[in-house]
Amino acid sequence: MTRIKAAGGVVVRDSGGGREVLLVHRPRYDDWTLPKGKLAAGESFEDAALREVREETGLRCTLGRELAGTEYRDNKDRPKVVRYWLMELEGEPGEFEPNDEVDEVRWMSLDEAPDELTYDRDGDVLGSAGPR
Image 1 (cartoon, rainbow, N blue to C red):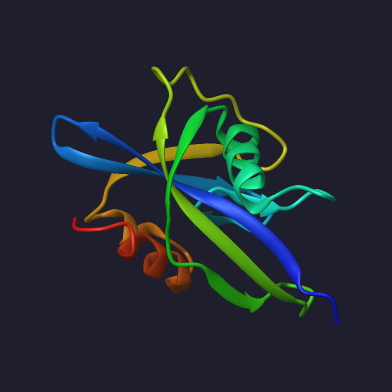
Image 2 (cartoon, rainbow, N blue to C red; image 1 turned 180 degrees about the vertical axis):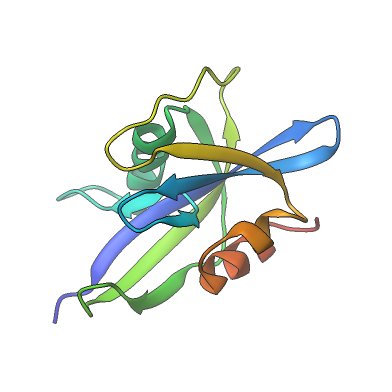
């Protein structure tokens, strides 16, 4: 069986109260997660991570260091691997516009975010981003 390859980002920013991370809500699954998506044919993991974050959130980011990845079986029982990178915003974020995949975004402190995530594996990725 072919392994599904995906990539995503842990988008962080500094706020008055410390570092915050961006979570996305996907109405199709009714979940809170990190922005990510499948690689296009011939696309690198790094390029896919930046593209998926931009498509899902509207944010342009720069790639930082690679974080912990995840491996699991998707909702169609296919093996899936997701690689993540720490990302910083390029410039000021504009107003979020809901799209086909994501209907809401939420900036949260690194302390609060793990409790909002639907999947424990996403919390492990956040943990690899560094101290809270």
